[in-house]
Length: 543
Ligand code: VG1
Ligand code: CO
Image (cartoon, rainbow, N blue to C red):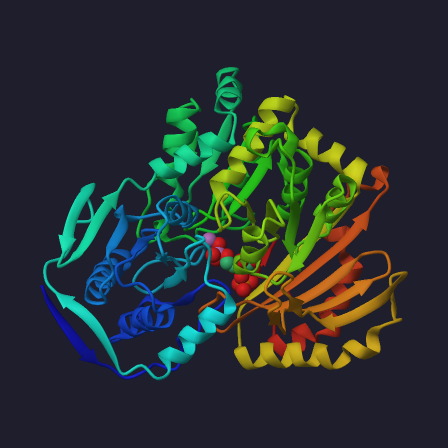
């Protein structure tokens, strides 16, 4: 196998966002674009020679081409061995599990997660380290700096690897092993959850619907839910991974998982519904006629962990991203465990998980996970809920209502304004920030603002600092309004407004969320001059 060193010129836009580098496929197809980024990672990480790495993706358009390029570059950069999911497939949590199980040095995960796929849509790539988790900010920043000065990359010339046959082959001196993408992950799930109890639940006639949204989790859900746990055939819908996800957004929320939502709120709904995203790390869970917010799901998982095999021994602590509601905080308080508030993005949980400070963590953006891997994990959350339902034998709605009565209910919503003009979005954020100091003491709808700031995070483990992580307005009664710009979008800017309000009185816990939050929603929109600055008054997505 011949190794070539090719000269190249830098691109100036390879700065990874919340979760890796995400761009339109057409941008990735520019000459040397992918090669520059991959070589920048290899140069920055610095120690891959002779080591094992993992490569896989969510199966979207350009996945296979990218994997062939990465394999040739890995061979040329003296990587010892690459483990690749069959068909180039690995869900994000499965990739994390495989890195950890085989002691790999790291891995490349190819995905733009919940963003649409296809020749005119999105692609993405990120590097995870040997703990199985996304590279921390210092590393992604160093990769970006490297990408600005890169002048050459190494690539092997030779035959393409057959990605579709499980087995071992070689590319020059490098070993390539195609692995079954599901089995290691399924085994890990069997260790964590009471499969016998969940099987008995299904055998008793419990009905569920899992919407894989034509994305990566189809094969995982079929193997685990239908094959191993005995869920009725047909429990999984949209279970074939497609390169364009059937033309939809593989984003498990109330807007984009419409087929599932319609069924769960229709006549004779199944007992439990769930969906996952493009790369399998997100989850939405629903009961019959009942939506569980991701923030509540995290709190309920924490409060019910003692029912579940892998978590029965107790929780070290919990963490949530800053915009996630405070529901889990009160569970932690009652359990007497630590609760951390981190910036948005799973990479910020890594140190806390590695240090054994937390067992569970989650984000309001349909992300929940634990110390079993270093990514959020969609099917894991679904199995957790199934395990709890199998033990408690109560309807989802009753379990959540009972939880609220005990801990209080955090009414919570997120309004997303997608593809806003970038200048306008930056102007809006600057305008809000300029008012923050004057806001403290202001009363809105009977509540007084007690703090207003730009969230900064000091990592308690490695003491690294992260600034500018979202504008927060907090009220004396615990209500909050948060403004952030998305770091995963690929068109213009996406403005996210997060609003929450705590209600401790059970008789007031069954109200409509948008109505309950209306005063805060209106204040957020007038404070930010949303409509005059962006021309938008209606959110693209309401969660
Ligand atoms: C969004 C979510 C964030 C999540 C990230 C990656 O980021 O808000 O909570 O960690 O997506 O999720 P942003 O910057 O667009 O708000 V995934 O499933 O896209 O990898
Ligand atoms: Co995802």
